[in-house]
Length: 432
Image 1: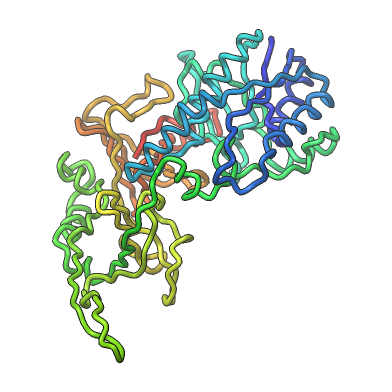
Image 2: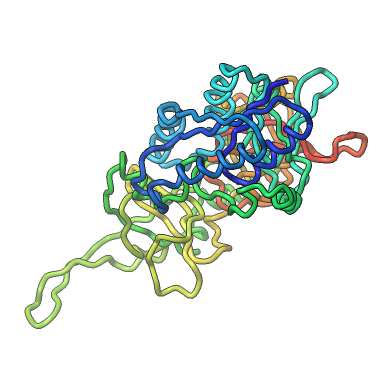
């Protein structure tokens, strides 16, 4: 059986290749280049060349053929252009999720098959098992700190059938130890960070390749706004007064929408200042908020963001609680417990719902208890899924911080003592 390992130059894919070789598979390695541009990146121009060099050394050490493939055109069209479009509309995409479904297990898989591969193997920390009906289940990896099933939440059954995850049953420490024991050139290489196959970036600079910078106001929202807002009070009353399954579609839709701060309006007055009585304009005091600073484009900010605001004079950090690309405003709140950071309901549009095993798809009107994560490495959160005509609603048992439009919510099955698998199964996902 012939297996193509996506060899990135990192320790995880290196050990995946080593294990498959030792298990007797006919293994070859392929390194993919997905990015040429360097504008906005925080590393040197030739970082990918260094990765390729290490990957080639690893392949030589293991004793497997090595190939190179340039998928930069596909990556730009399917991942980067999608990124730009999402940010332009005020959403925050997850390019790593798209990279797996659109590139590694699609374009890359096609290239591997052209070279005779039956499977593509990667260094992801996750596992797959075949269910009794013949379909494939995707399970968390056993290392709780490294599970990467979230990044694979858009894979299809066909893609899963062609995938191998050799290190999913190992701890990261075991992977490092095995790489050192085998004297692999990548044994001490640090884990990659940043956007998949682009690297760490200065996001505003990166996005400015296509999105224009336009100055706007940063508005700090005070607690007094929440006390005065009828909309906010209604949301609280709905959550406290009804069980999730009793909520109507309209009520669920209201609860799933980000809070609207557009009613915070600032009036100005002119005054004369200094010896020469120069005419100046200033904002009148507003009990609901204050213009705390300026920004270079609302599309460059994301919910929960702390860095990059450059606003001082606060006892606690400021966090982005909302963005409005139409008015080009960024709204912030002081402190990790600010009310604007939390929400209990999110919605996935009908055409954005993806089930890993179609046989497990929720029928219309059904509900299901499960556990959900809305970002990588977040602990699984207890929630109820409600399938309604308006979409799939996720109602959390506890309010969640920084629910971000454009990100992916991944749904996992509850533990079943009678189930022989010892890790949560990834049921499906949806774009928030």
